[in-house]
Length: 79
Image (cartoon, rainbow, N blue to C red; front, side, top):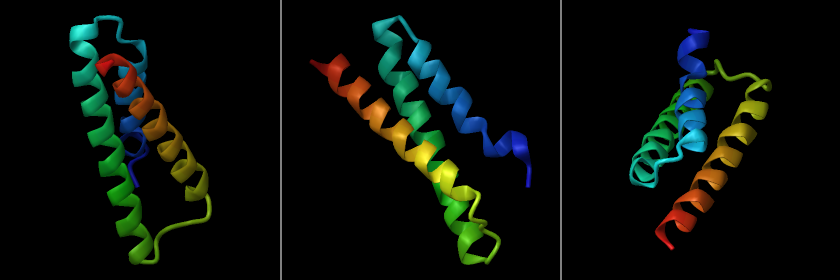
């Protein structure tokens, strides 16, 4: 496994959290959501191949929490 690739979603997530320009915020949110969904897809593939480990449970929770936060941010910026 490539640890850098595994955590790439975190960089997109941080960029969205730190974005102050409201015009760029939605774009950052969508990029982060795409990166998170891609990572979730990777984890699912690994689990179906029998590669998944219980350690991934922490990452699943982090991914879920990040999606919840981004959803709330998107809703606030649309209001």
